[in-house]
Image 1 (cartoon, rainbow, N blue to C red):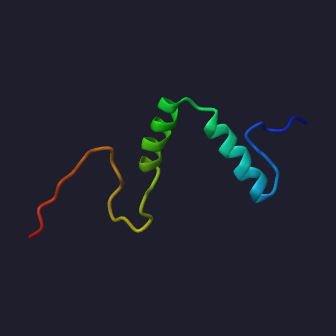
Image 2: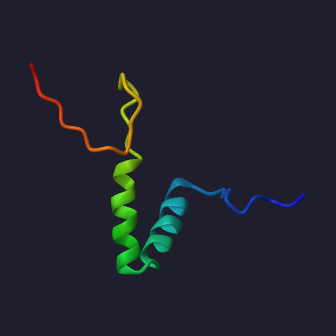
Length: 61
C-alpha cells in the first residue's frame, strides 16, 4: 500500500521546519502570493453570512 505524499508524520518542530523550508524555497513573488491567499483562508466560524470574494461596504444605521 502506497502512502499519500501529502501526509507527513513527524513532531510539531519537524513539521514546522519542513513547512518553513518549503516556504523559503519559493520565489519572492510566490511568497507574496501565498501571503495574499492566506487572508482568503481566514473565515469567521460564527459569521451569519457565507463569505464571498466580493468587497462589501455596509452603512451602519
